[in-house]
Image (cartoon, rainbow, N blue to C red; front, side, top):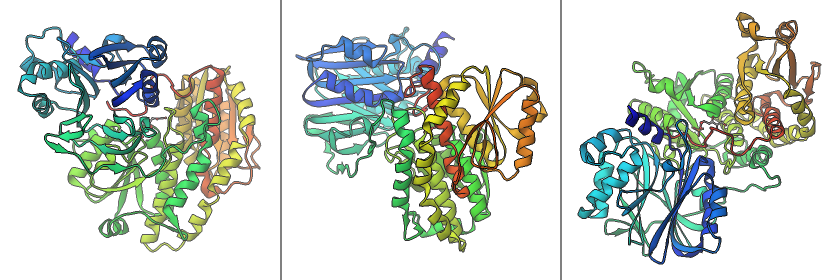
Length: 601
Ligand code: F6R
């Protein structure tokens, strides 16, 4: 039983890997690279470096501790680092990576899950009684079998493990890294000083000029003479063509920079996908003809990506008349009976690495090829799948909570709806596209109200119960507002359709309750007002953002906005609100607790 629990704990690694091999560099410079990837996990971290032919392994609770404890002038030419994120179980240093084999001949950093770890230990490492974690099983299996050759032992292990994993190994007395992956991203980059290994190119992109995305089930050896699979030297490096960051860092917190960047990211999307008032997606003729006649569309995602899909449903139904359904990844994974073979599926994932989305997308692709992937990460496992794809081009999102990738997903879904409508003979595409050109300006108009929103944030903190509630499409926007609010503030809130409050929810409304609402995408003003009156009649308070000047309410009214763009922009006041409340509570807005940028469990 204990064993089972421990393995589950190890399975919660989301984590980030960074490795360096080349000319001697200061360890402090390497820690900068690790901190670029810290968004993937900040429960513990570790570093292994070679100096004078000796390997030193250090583990810390966080990168600041690592920085303060390793002398800044130490230099090394082989460094391997890891940041770890845990969902449950402890985050103690014994679980920090790199993890070494019993005789310390093998050190490994590992992302992902070995789902059959227990079985592997019982079968191949039965004498290693105290080994519990799947990463320990990897290290010790390789140590035990390296007599047959390091690459051979790794290849054998990769063939045996189940689940998704990326590993990078370092061996005693060997100036190389050995890497392998199974449905987890791992990239090798080369730069002026040497080679780098990383789970996300964003951590190393300023150091490299070209990269390789490692392929599943192959064993790569990285040494000073290059990257090899067996005797074959890898030659076809991909050169970095554009700066993925492109984010002026005006404020200290990435989150607020990213919220503000939405004016720029929206115009960037339009510059990429709109040409002469027409939307262009790189779909095959065959796929275009599928879209012409498809009877139903499913939009699948988790968290903020699911919420963006709710806005997409509205656009697709409005502009194309095609029936559209939203699904969580898990609804696909655990429904054993039904895949709609006629419908098309849209999978949204900003990271492109969320395990649930990878598994659910694979499940659909096995029987239905009518799939579109929307992601911000062209280096992700999802982006590798064989189907139609759209990139968000939102730039890196360093802050863990999604903001600009959410709005970018809604813009892409707007464009997709217009695109499908045009394929089906719709005449209004031009009109809608013209409207989108106003988007960056509309976003700037909202951002100019930051100080007013900050004042509202100061009023919220005194309430014990927070409910996000509105009607029609506003309820979908408020669902995302609620997610952002609890992620950043840690205040217990929930969201519900305003029209549903009368069916039971009123029981919890009292003077300690604040309902935060929105009036933007709703044609039923009287009904909305009567819903709010039910709350006020039970001494609950209401604060709302309204985009209708006739609607006088406690909160903030934004005037003169294009109603067709409100489904996209009306989330922004709530992103700001959550930011200001979180700041007031002294929370770390870039690294909110218990959240990771990509959920690989
Ligand atoms: C919210 C957030 C998460 C993600 C969810 C799905 O701020 O970041 O809710 O939206 O984990 O992640 P992706 O879109 O990467 O599949």
